[in-house]
Length: 417
Image (cartoon, rainbow, N blue to C red; front, side, top):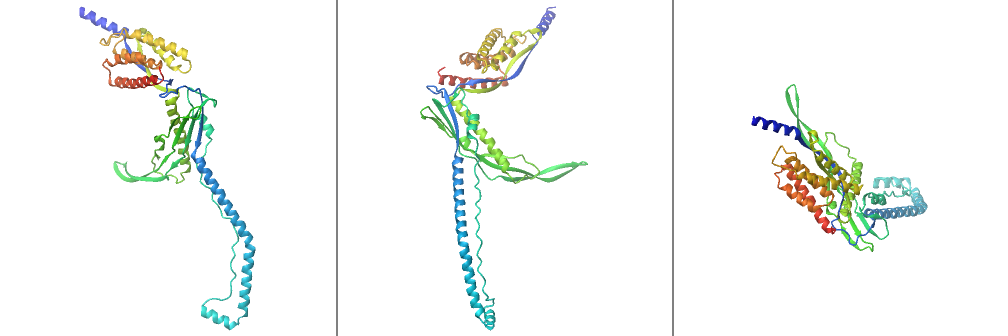
């Protein structure tokens, strides 16, 4: 009878607290503190882009114009000299014909036999003057640099203005690439027909070339004093383009492929530079993709957990758009999570806040601490979480949170927070 009562009670508890931890992906934005904040802080900035290709293009165009001018001068000189050359050729021919006509027929025959050629004079050819064709130079690509700067060089946390402002200047060295090549590889393939396997050779083709677009960035203060300058090695290293292999040989006209590769790399490198600068001195609006956990249970047995989860979700989603609301919701979520954890019993699988729920609540709490930049309480929560017997998945997630808070702690210290 006693055993039956225990069994019934266990089943009842299972029905009341029948629960499952669910995870929901969430993406939100937060302001990342700079690693090297400016002291004293400057409020304004303006960004510019220059390109070494412009100077190279200007030189090529100047040489082109000079070559055209020389070709025109040569043409005009030859045109002026042409009548005199024609007259000289005519006069010479007339004199030679006069001498030739004065010879007897016998003399002409003998000279022809002795010399084995016709000795009758031939008028000198005077070529008609013509303009030399000067080929247009192959110029490096040029872009709308003010528009690119306005789009890609944005210093978060600063106002775009030129008065008492930082100078944020990027120089593009220009796009370089090797000659694209069509490469091929012969592979064995197998076909099966009527149960008979046949091996045959197939040639696969792809396009391959290397490319790069080095850039440098200089940040200067109000009086043009250099704050920092860097030419990232990552942008000077050559990358390799390799198309998808195909049984069809591709076109040997690579112009559009190279052009699109250049344009994509330009945007990619400017984004890289902008992140580098913002990470150092800006207050970068950063996107974070993570997840929050909630508990699905019968009879609303975890309504408090769900309410805290909802507050956390709203707080994270509004972190950079409505700071007051975000802080209110995150504070409410943190307070609720802390109360919920006082009920934790990781050794009782039938407890309302069992081990799985405890771990889930800890991770949600720590995410809220991160959004609030609360490293002190987060450190305590991470320590408590580390004392639990975590799954491999949860251990990896905790390691990521440890790294995240270490970075946040260093950034807070650099900013005097």
